[in-house]
Image (cartoon, rainbow, N blue to C red; front, side, top):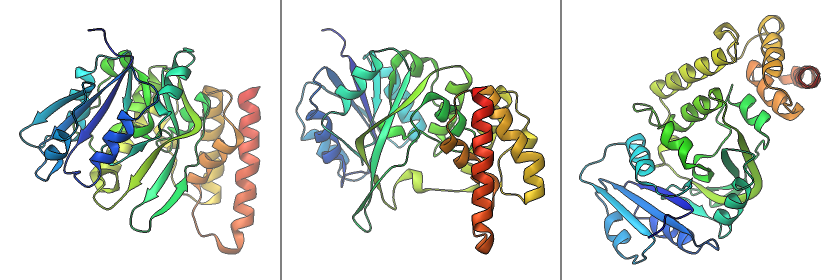
Length: 306
């Protein structure tokens, strides 16, 4: 039996309400050469029973007797994957029917190593759908890693060799994706986000990414510091809200250095990054802070291109 082109990896823990729709969205893909590996991470609800209902030779299953956490689940799934590419989809999200075919075609061009996409956010409490606001180029993604996670993990497909070489770091649940993107960017791997919306990302109160705590923020900060140091940018310039005169001494040098290290960053990405140095709710001063942000973003982008 030959290996599939794509291994779709789905960790699952107490997701009886959602997992059937997630599985169906993969089995109904227009691209057929894939395996779907589901790791049931010690679920105590009806998740296991629902997985049992699907009889498809492309489904591989891993069952754990007790919950061992998301990072462990992702790493076990990556180890089990046989495909040339690895695609992630969480058990509470939904893939568009052309998701795999679109990302495989893009990755086959070998211009990037990791490919995300735009997506819809579904807010379960209200039922509202919202389109994501992404940045798409490798330069913008690398620059934005300095302040946020610019890739939506369940929308990512990438070369399996990359994920097998760089496993998710244990102990970094809830910040595991950001830490990995920062590590891969430091190692020189290439990124892209596709403009097509390829998944629906469900937002609900039990979702692990909604869990925010001091430990998660500390992990994020440490990963960001390491990333900036890999670019040769001092941790003293770390993005954080500050007053105007501090921005002159910290934010401006940061943005200029970042654009020297990463050429081709767009004005829009620089605008988003510089905003992290400004306070929100500036009242009547808001037009002036926005103008400051725009001017510095233009100057930084021009400096990067020169």
